[in-house]
Amino acid sequence: MFFKCTECNKEFPVETTNFNCNCGGAFDLLYTPPSFSLDLVDKTEWSLFRYRAYLPVTNDVWKDISMGEGMTPLVELGTSSSDKVFVKVDYMMPTLSFKDRGAALVIWLAKTLGVKKVIQDSSGNAGNSIAAYAARAGMECEIYVPEGTSTSKIQMIQSYGAKVKVLPLSRDDTAKACRKAAKNGEGYYASHVFNPFFYQGTKTFVYEVFEQLDRLPDNFFIPVGNGTLFIGVMLALDELFASGIIARRPKIYAVQSELCAPILTAFNAQKDSPAPVTSHPVGAAHPAGAAKKTLAEGIAVGQPARGSQILRYAYDTGIEFIPAAEDKILEAQTLLARQGFFVEHTTAATYAAYLSHRHKIEGDVLLPLCGAGLKSAK
Image 1: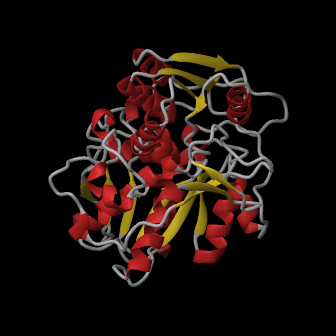
Image 2: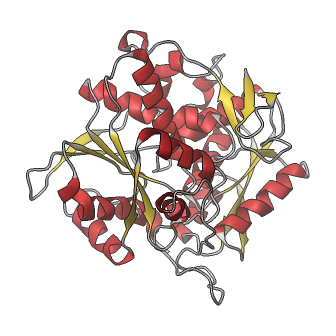
Image 3: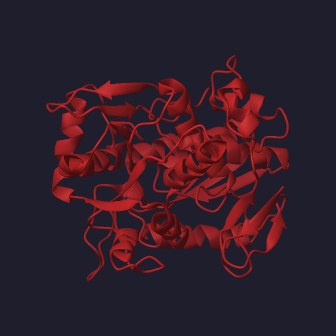
């Protein structure tokens, strides 16, 4: 298998220690799974690896890494209107977030390649996932996080035996610092943004929904920061559509915080690359002149590395970008909690965006509950 640069099309073997192309472009994975059919799903395996016929998994190392990630509940949400809304409870994972889907695949690759130490940057959830799966695989791990990251997330990362570097920087500058360390050979960059295997994990979100309903809902609401769930969803929809198992793709509503919306802003202006935004989650230092802080730290990404790729998806497939109002996030969190789902602020932002747009929507709706509410505690 090979990686392919999204900008210049140069190819690299997946064994490379490079995390992006020499031209600066991000990698895609050159991998075409077989035509999707539920007949190839291993119904004896109760993890996302039940779909390994459609994953670039070439050995049984996954058996020593998997912690039963995936297979999360799909529940109809009670609403005060006639809307039919499903929530996919993706925080019911080993580390309480959907990022376990991607981490399982990235650490499978790292273990297969004989990696001894991984490093990664994160606002919390991805760091937790990589740290947990690295521990499972017997690897050293170091996670770079920006100042202002939830204390509970940092404590979780440390509990797995990983080292945490808290930097007094924005989310984007923290990522740059980690990438510099990776280029200096300080560890294999197990990035949830740059490593294409991560998206091979998150695409199983859609496989599960299809298996659970024997169809897909008409509308998906997906939070977008770096696009780790979004790109996985798009990959899976392309596969299902190409297989003829769905006749049309669901309508995708891509949600960004109104206080950190580089892709939404570019989309509205019909630009090819994200608008410049400096991201500062609540709790971080707030330089004069910087963008206001957002509670939705999981999507507080001002310089998304795959922003141009996400915009191309949007222009090609009719995606709509919508903002989440900052003053509605806590209210949305409470509304979900009153129905039994205690979610973190980023997930609440997605629900807030849905509530503000539901009068414009036709058909049923799917909302991912990406992270547990305990992770929002400072």
